[in-house]
Length: 302
Image (cartoon, rainbow, N blue to C red):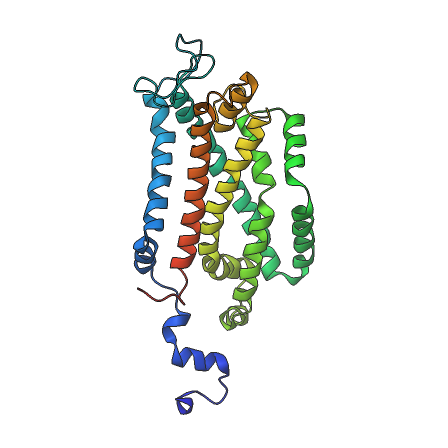
């Protein structure tokens, strides 16, 4: 076997000859089969689709909760699947309407974080001159207490869905930047990047045509994990009274239960929004992990 390897080939050349499949990422269809091979992959995607459909179509089918109802603090029943609160409002309707707000904040905030984090991560990976300040700013942001800063900025600007989206997005990019930069450094050191430079390719072309496609799988994983963290942040800020008072959210439902003093008695008012938060965050996290595993060329098909 060693006679087949060129004299100037090092250990990398030996790996390429002995294990060619290990250095080649799986195709899209093969990755999809690997993703769905385990029940956790199919179940997580199914749950995410359920939340997506609920957020898009739920408010069109369920009346917006409001006003006063005659049935106060009713436990879950056929008439009220998730029970009612201290004002007689249907908790199921609150959870459905809160799904749209939570998904909106999660998607928009993760988009902001991904755009900023990916841009800075690629800049730091490609430009040695810019890498120093990108790393410094990223480490500085990661060292800050994010929750107190989010509370302070939201309180100063004013509670609204837009404010929560931008605050969460602007404080969530450092993890993405560090991840993209680490993987981008590996790609930039590849021989074909040096070849592109020798052929006269500009830095913009190398970053957008060579480095960016190589880190797309990490971007997909970052989208899911950042969205999961955004859901938790939005619920936490809303529970602290910093959410939009004119919009329903899962955190606001729990806040209403705490303010009315029925957390220990009307358990359904906090159980169902808490389960919604848990299922959405868990589904997004598991989907991200399964996607990352399905793209790993070192894993064998079983």
